[in-house]
Image (cartoon, rainbow, N blue to C red; front, side, top):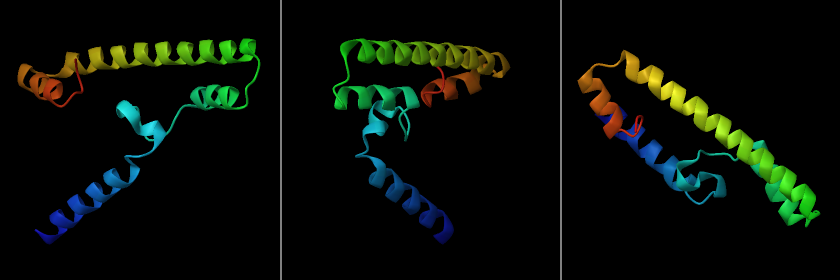
Length: 96
């Protein structure tokens, strides 16, 4: 029992400590992508509009590719699950 409680406390502490990080918003993960960092830097450094536009386009390309990979992975997962497992995966947010 003590080990289980200690593990939960550690996880809660980690989650609480990282909640204020900018890359952690909207469940997007603990770190920003290199493309997002590059766009942020371009805005911060007040680079020319053409450079900001280029970096914005690159970020959108990467996000679209990642979304396509996620959709394919979700299809592959759904294919190997039975109905109950799929229901659990949907409730856990793994599948739409």
